[in-house]
Amino acid sequence: MRVGRNISLFQIETHAALWLLSGAVLCLIMADISYVDLESVQELLRSKEIRYAIRLTLLTSLLTTVLAVLVAVPSAYALSRFPFKGVMFLDILVDLLMVVPVLVIGVSLLVFFRVGSDLAASRFGLPQFLGNRVAEAGNFFIYQRPGIVLVQFFCSVPFAVRTIKAAFDQIDPRTERIAMTLGCTPAQAFFRATLPQAKPGIFAGAILAWARAFGLFGPVSIVAGAVRGKTEVLSTSIYLEISIGRLEVALAISLLMMAMAFAALLILRLGVKSTVFGMRDRA
Image (tube, rainbow, N blue to C red; front, top):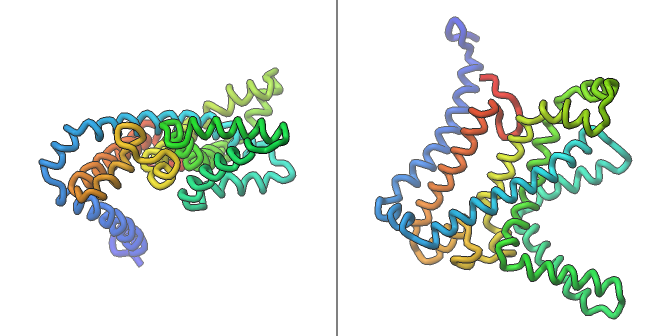
């Protein structure tokens, strides 16, 4: 059924669903804005602890993004181009990090370092050696700033892998074979033929990994704690402000995080005409 020259009823229904969803999100944002007063914003800007949390959040999330992309690119390429017996098991393990609650990842990291400390007490040489190394790593990560990066990495890397793999899957492997017939090694074919075509998808994976790391709360508080001036990031700042009854300041921090995330997604859409899943924008 058509209601106009170029507009069908089906188009109106689909657009209505989109506008309803977008409107619901906008209503939530406007509700937050209406609850925040100027005094809360000024307190947010004056607070040394919040400024430290902003710097630490940006530093850890950017470092996590770099590490996630460095691991995700070769992992995604292997999943896309080199299928082998048992690859489904590895594929599921990658997805497992994305499916399980993030609190499970935080608890699992704590247990891992605890098991290492237990192995350090073993009377056997190899378990004792491995246990000592894990225990030393635990002292480096647990309730320390590097622990924030560790948790963010495990929670964000599967999203980067999935997005970048989708980009590799869309590239015709014949371009690599042609490059190799012209004298390139497999590595040279990857860097010269495939990687340039996958850049939008890699950038999208990096943005998605950053967004995941940027807003992470539960496992960060479990592994790194929420110590003000030491391991406090913006997500834990919201929790700390709510715990002492300062809801307006917590909402001001929330709006700041929304604005930063919106800016990152806008850069992605305008810079490479891509969504966070690496698909080209047809608009």
